[in-house]
Structure formats: structure tokens, C-alpha cells
Length: 402
Image 1 (cartoon, rainbow, N blue to C red):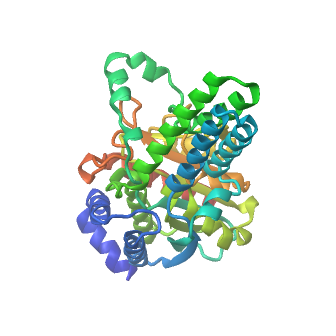
Image 2: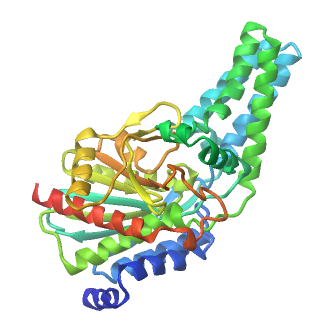
Image 3: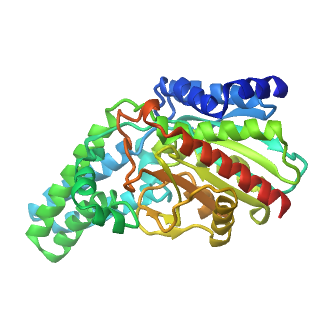
């Protein structure tokens, strides 16, 4: 089987392989925990098995969306504001504080109490494949995700496109994307503060903010999946290309786990399931995580850190290893940027694993088509995806000989 797959790839070429993976999967609606996510997982498993990997699909308990729990908490913010404006200041303060804390808990991967109380758990589908030196006690986990996000009016890029066209200096000076989650937190937080201090205008501001968040979450929660060609079938394709390379030229001294998680777009539900099943058997001292997420925009970026509320930097030593691999193999890597969103890389980082996350931006430092219906295969920069695959291979070979 490995020889057959390798021969096929040799005829097709790397670009054709990348294109075939993305085009095949982009046509499947892949909302978190959906039948489409499951279908995609089995197709990815079959591709990896074709390169000689020990590949399985693991079912994990997961919740299907962030929109509904955040929507519920935003509704609590609205109700608390109304209560506070009607003179029930204690209820306004308590309700607003609970809602704000609940949103922070959910988006930062805490106990996630709201979704546990308000939602029924479903099933996400993780692909887990082994290759490399299976006897080695050192492991590199290459992490991607194959589900796709719904869109929403909050993802409209008109403002950033205008800024890029008219004030490119502002975009160039930015070191992180705007904190999209802060307004959702601010609504109920202002309700709580206004109720506690007796300020009506703060309560009104909190009411308006909470209503806006509630409307945004309802909008997102009712939408179908976008094609998700760049986010994150580009990562899946890079991982498949890596499996092809390791089938051609096996690596010694390092086990490589290829993990395509489901339900990332529900705020990392799939990788949390992987953590419950596997982290106990992966020693922190001898395991590294390389997360590839949205790597087809044109310019690869080695994120310095990420965090929707507080910024958390990734392991400096491992980032330097990845950066040096880029230098050694002539793979341009933009550094100095941080993300106010969250990716699957946040989960192993939080558990203490050396983790690096590679994303991409276009020539104007924007992330085009993000969570939009225009995230189509024809808009993917396949050369950028190929560089992500080359980078992952270089990291694997460097760790194997370290």
C-alpha cells in the first residue's frame, strides 16, 4: 500500500496532491460534530492509511457550537440589563457578572459550564495516524482540523479591506488581529458595573452590547458551514503531503502522530477529546506539537502567542527550532505576530507541551475569506501550503536527530 500511494503522488506532483485533498473535502459541509465532519474524517483516514500510516478515526464527546452557549450568556446579559434598568440593581450586577464570567470561561477553555448545562453533547471525529519510528519514545504531533465554520455578519471584511487600501500603514503596524471576543464580554460586564454603581448609561451601553452579541450568535448559529478550503483544509492537505514524504523517506528516532481534529470551530472540542484520550500517554518532556491552521493565504506566520482574553506566548525554544528550520530550508516565516483568536494549539500549550502554531496571511497581512463563503479551493495559495508541508517535514527531521 505505501508503495502504491507513493507512486501515485509521484505522478500527480505535490501541488496536484494538495489540490485533490482540498477540492475533495471542500465540497462536503463539515460543521462541528456533523455527518459531514464524520465523512471527511474517514476520507482523511483512508488517505493516510494509503501512505502506510496506522490510521484510525476516534469518536470523542463534544459540543457542536460556541454560538449557542455564548448566545445564552448574552441573553442573560440582556435580561440583567433590563432588570437593572427597572431598579433591580442587585440582579443586574449579579446576572451581568455571571454572564461575563461565563463568556470568559467558555472562550478560554475553562470549565465551559454554560455549554455543559445548556447543550447536549454530541460526537466529534478525530483522525489519529502514526508514522515514523513507532518504537521511539520521542513524539512530534502534527495537528490540523478538518471541520469548517459557519459564517456570520461579524466576519465581514469591509473595514479591514478599506484600511488595507487606504491606510496600509495601520495594518502594517498591527501585531495582532482585533480582539473580536472583547465586545461580547464587555456587554454583560458593563451591565454588572452599571448596576453596581448606579450608572444608567453604563447599563444602557451593556444592554446594547449584549443585544448585539446575542444577534451575532443567533446569526452564526443558524448558518451552514463555509467551504473551509483555507481554514483548515490547507492544514489537512499539508499533513497528507507530509505523510507522503515520510512514506518516501522514513524518519528514524522520532514517532510522528498526524492528528486531524474535529469540532475545532466549536472552540477546540475535538482536540480536548484527544487530550482526554492521549495526553496521559504522551510525556511532556519528549513530545512536541506543531499546529498547522489556515496555511494557504500566501505568507506563513509563526505565531508568537494567542489568546482571546489574555495573550499566552508559545514555547520560545520550540518556536526557535521551527524558525531555524524555515531558515535552513529557505521557507519564509513571518514572526512577531500574535492572534486574538484561538486555535487547537492552545490546548497542548495549556497542558505544558512545547507547541508552535503556524498560520498565514496575505501580502497585506490580512486573512482573506476568513469564515466566509468565499473560502474556496480556487482562493488557496498552494505554494504556501506546500511550504507548510516542507516546514513540518524539516521540523520532524530536526527533532529526530536532536
